[in-house]
Structure formats: structure tokens, C-alpha cells
Length: 103
Image 1 (spheres, rainbow, N blue to C red):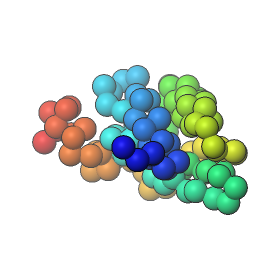
Image 2 (cartoon, rainbow, N blue to C red):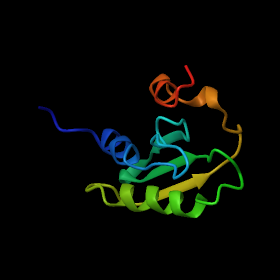
Image 3 (tube, one colour):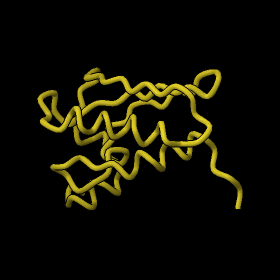
Image 4 (cartoon, helix red, strand yellow):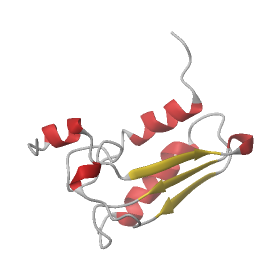
């Protein structure tokens, strides 16, 4: 079995984080807009929330940063929150839509 790339490890870590109100991980929900690998194994993660007033916003952002920073081989991890474009159900994976009965 080949070793996972850093990017694969980041995606794997993010798939363990769930929106407290929706039983689907934030990767499948489409909340992760971009994982940008930079020089020196630094990474910027651009993400959104299901709603700007999400009560768990701080908790989710902290969890993403904590879990990604724990990956061996990464240096700086920056999680950037954006609402452009605003999230909607179409950004969810088919798997997530199926799980929620939206397909």
C-alpha cells in the first residue's frame, strides 16, 4: 500500500469532522472550498459554513485547524472562512445528499 500524500491525509482528517446539526462530514457537505498546498508544506484551507450565523462556527474552524495541524509533515496551517460563494445544497456530494434523503 502506498503512503498517502499530505493532501490525502488532510482530506482524511477533514472527513472526521461533522457539522453538529447535520450527520454528514464537512468535506462531503461541500464546506471545504479549497485546500491549497504551499511551499515548505504549509497549507491554507478555504471553507464556509452552512449558514453565516452557524452557532458552531468557532468550534468547527478550531477542529479543522487542530486535526490538520496534527498531521506529521505539515508546518503552518491556516483555515480561512469565506461566504463567497454562499453555500447551498448543490455543493454537497451525492453521497451526502443520499445520506440525508435529498436525492
